[in-house]
Structures are given as C-alpha cells and as structure tokens.
Image 1 (cartoon, one colour):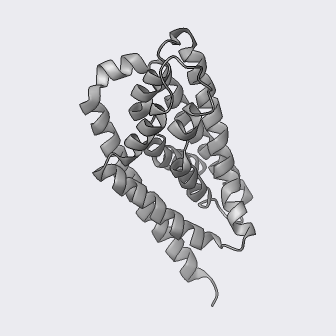
Image 2 (tube, helix red, strand yellow; image 1 turned 90 degrees about the horizontal axis):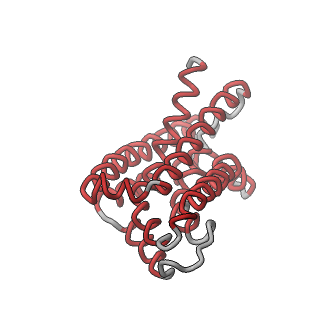
Length: 219
C-alpha cells in the first residue's frame, strides 16, 4: 500500500468510524438548548468542547488498546469484540433514536441559562461518550504491529481524521442555530442514517480483520 493511500485510508477509517457516534450535527440542537442565554460564549464553548473531544479521542485511539493488551487481551480479540460493538452501534443508529434520546436526557438535567461547563455535560456525555470512546479504542487496535514507518503514516492519517472530527464539532456547535434552521429535523436524520450504515459496514470489516488475524496466530 502506498504512503498516500495508507494516510488516506487511516483518515477515512477514523473519520467515518467516529463521526456517526460523536454525531455533532445531531447534537447541535441539544447544544443550542443548553447554551441558551449564553450566546456571547457559544463559540468559546464550542472551541473548548472540540479541543476536549479531540484529546479524549486521541488518548482512546492510541492508548486504549495498549491498556487492554496489558490485561492479556490479544489484538485479534480486541478487534473482533470491538468490531461487534461498532456494528451494534451502527445497527442501533439505523433503527432507533436511542443515542439522541440519551443525550436529550442528559441535557434535561441542565436548564438553559445555567452556568455550563465545557467538559461536563457538553464534552461528556453529550459529544464524547462511552460509545465513541469504545469505537476509538477499536480503531486504534487496527494499527500496524511491526512496521514503524507504516505506523507513522497511519498515525498521521488517524490524527488528521480526529482533527476533522474536532472541526466538525466546532462548526456544528458554533453555528448550531444556522445548521438547525437549514437542515431541519429531516435533513439531520438523513445525514445520520447514511453515516450509521457506513459505521455498520466498518464494524463488519473490523470483525473480519480480527478473525483473519486470529486464524493466522500459531496454534
């Protein structure tokens, strides 16, 4: 695989895998509700949430699978189990509104106009929750095992993917009012359904990769 294709593949894998779970477009109306009465601080809060989310996902992507390995769980098993989680999230997003409802329940605990912290609940659990962290850990398990030059390329593409996710978080939250007005509920639903289907396919692909790796291990 060429250097450019390795970087592009890693970028697309991370971005397409995390975007439907992070769901910045779908969460924009909730962010808007939580920051009512703080219009002058909305862009600063959006910037803080995007930075917090980036570093949370970065740690999960590059450290999470190592933590699992420390407990004796091999990478092929991490890939199979994580792929099942990713596919399950994609399937649930295709057929239900559980993620959105969960976020709305979290939002209901904070009345508009209250003093809002950028980390809780805006970063966690509204933007980066257990689902997106588990997906990031699973994607991190896809790293090359021995080729360090290839790992550097893949890591660069993955970080670029995380930056793209962080940028979508910032844009979706900073301009939440305009996005909600332009897309409407139907448009938001279409975007997220398409993203959920891609996520489901990624989960199946990760399971297949994990199965092949497991079969290649010596008996």
